[in-house]
Each structure stands twice: as structure tokens, then as C-alpha cells.
Length: 256
Image (cartoon, rainbow, N blue to C red; front, side):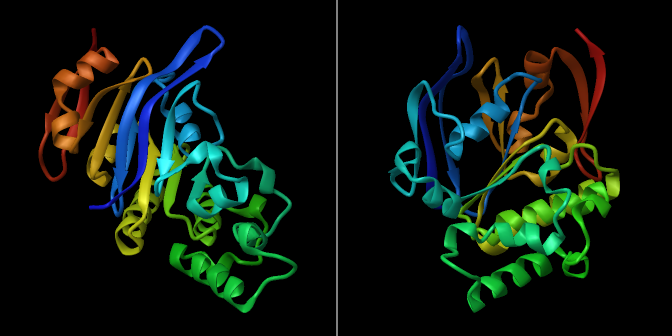
């Protein structure tokens, strides 16, 4: 698989606190990579460094050979689609208006016919075309998450970043969102990077796991190689057992 997004020796300080410590990693096309680790490990900070929201104190992020920090905001918006944890700023907009916002990097004066096709396609791919004229605050949590993903897709990004995409969703909507994310990665050859707390869902729907502890990469690789009882105990301070069928299930046993 081709590599389009590369992180080289990135560290981030919040005053005297080191949030990231010498992160170096690459992300591949068509691959779902999930960042896991305890609260405060640095997952969200890394996501924000990837798309230029946060400038590394040390180190560089490259996309397609260009330094992220040297790209203009409009160029970044064409390369990165970002789905944050909370999206309360859209309450007074309709679904279609929100998805249309994803075309801002491409619009000069008015929507072109191509812009309209992308918007309609984004709604259809996510399965919310029937909600186009509904207001955001009328939707369920799962529907809201699909709207924000559709908005990100309307940007036609090369990289899709998601921060806790299944937080506060019921089981049905968790599965729907994660199946959608995985399908988008494969069908669109997207580089998908998401931060998650649910290790079982991460195990099932990820191609690659990056386990972060105290701002550093503790382990990275295939889920079965990273999400082991030994690694989980070392990072989370919890003893677990892992059962294989029908899908790998991580069961916490006790806090150490």
C-alpha cells in the first residue's frame, strides 16, 4: 500500500507538560488505523497535529511530500476530513446545509453542478439522503454522526480523521458507523485514522492499531499483535482475557 501521510519525530508541549514525545509513524491508503490508549495518552493531540489544527513543538507531518504546517487552510481542507468528538455548532442548520459546508474549499461564488453532485453523493453514500431537509438538532446521535461524516466526505479528502466516532452511540449505531468507515476506506482508498476507547470495536474494524502510552508509541501493528493481554496490562494497568470466537473479545478481569 502507498504511503501518503508521514509523521517524523513529533513532540508537543503544553507549557511544561509533554503531550506527545517523539512520534514517528506512517499511514497507508485504504487502511483503517486506530489510535488507542488511556485518557490523556495523546490520541486527540496526535489527530490535531496530523491535519494542522495543532502545530508540533518539534518534528514534522508530511502529506504527499508536503509539510502540513506550510499548507494553507484551504489546501488542508482538501486533503483532510475531520470528524471531532462533539458537533454542537450545527444545531440551526439542515442536514444538506451542513454537508454543503464541506464544499467550502472548492466554491468561488456559488455551487457548481459538480459541487451539487458531490453533496448528493455524500448524502447517499452515508445513507442519509432522506434526512436532507431535517434540522441537525432533530436527529438521533447516530444520524448526527453520519451527517458530520458526510460533510467530511464532501471535502473529497485524502485522509479521514475521526475522534471517538462511536462515543455516546448505542450498539446498533456503533456497528453502522464502524462498518461505514471501513467500507469508505476500502472503496475510496482513503487513509482513515480514528481514536477510540473501545478496544473490542478497534480490534474488529481496524487494519492497524497504534497503542499510545504517555505520549509515545508503545506498540503498532496488526490488532492481534498489538492488543495482547501483556500490552493491555502494561498500558492500561488492567488484566484481561481474550476470547477468539466469533470475533476477538477482550474481557477485563481486574485492575492491577
